[in-house]
Length: 396
Image (tube, rainbow, N blue to C red; front, top):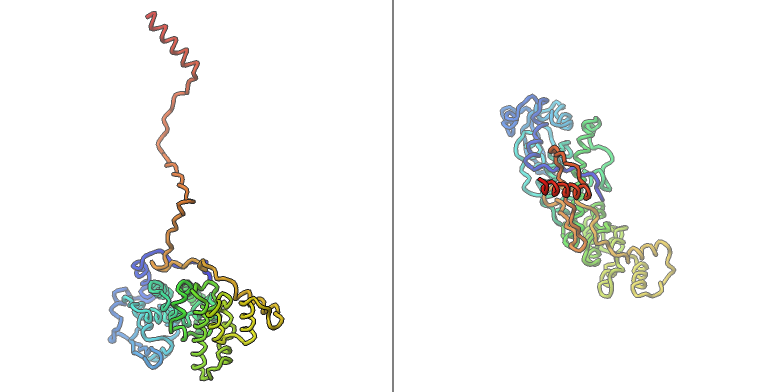
């Protein structure tokens, strides 16, 4: 995935924090910044209660209709109901807490990956692109192989350019133009973060493929990683073993027997991602012993590796697979990262000393008035003038 548009701005985090306080504290809410700050967690003036959380971990949060209804179309739709208690059972309570902090102009506390990830989910579902930007920048600062695996889980549902992205807004209230624009902005920040996360996984492929979080990924999330041509694995055996572990975990989740057929059925076309013909000797035997391929496919790989004739006639599809398994991976990265934080800031490229040329110094413009110069005289005119002056001196 290559993202051409860079939505990230170059301003500092302090400028971002200052600019993000406009919507909840604007004229539409009728309240000033100081009043909003005093209303956070204020029970005396609250007129609505939210019960937010998932998987039984629910917390109670007091709210104020007048403030929150002006922040986004989602809050406006929720608060239009004639009820005093609203249950938000599709957002982690940590993310909902940071969402309320942002809308009440309180400092957000994105100290951990889990909190920042939950806050990004809340910002997306409640159409708050400013908070989504803040979460994306914070997560980009903490990106490494394990963090990239954690935040990539189900992130494709919040992206617009990743495979498996939602084709329609999840809520009926997203039919108006303003809601659609806010949703597009949130998706743009999620796309940029996912782009950087995939580049980090490319660069640290060995660490990512041996991480236990890989076994928790869904099939679609796993396919985003292992199908990448630019995975910089030190050995294709690492990728084959990672797929074997994931297929074993998938069989256990679905309560199926741990047979080679069930593992191959769980992997599907992902079993063809390792480049088996880049292996040789014992490593190739270990990769084929994982039984990710059908018996006939393993026989074809072994015959091609030993430069023997194939046991059966090789068709066009099988020949394409054999060429794919023998093609080396490119050493260059897929694309440049999107500049979201100091971690993804592009490095200044220094030209090689052998090929470097000293840049020409540009002329400095001068706006001073030019002095009028005397006309230049020729050699004969100067000689005659000198001879005349000599005669004048002799006869003076």
